[in-house]
Image (cartoon, rainbow, N blue to C red; front, side, top):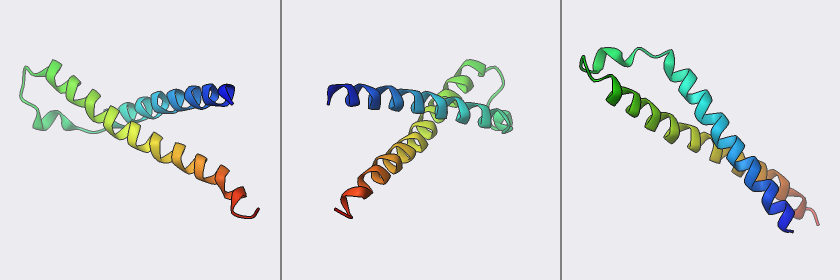
Length: 78
């Protein structure tokens, strides 16, 4: 019981970090510099990071929920 909670925690943390990194990489392809004032590089990177965290955790949560729901489908047929 406790081991499965630990495994779920590791999978959840890995998933969140993975999707945050993927979102960060995808955002690097956007040209958002045009809307950011010159000389605000640090602020722009902070905004990029916060947006990547928000989008990455949302996508990760979707996949983790979907995984949990798919595992619970076997209870439907019992």
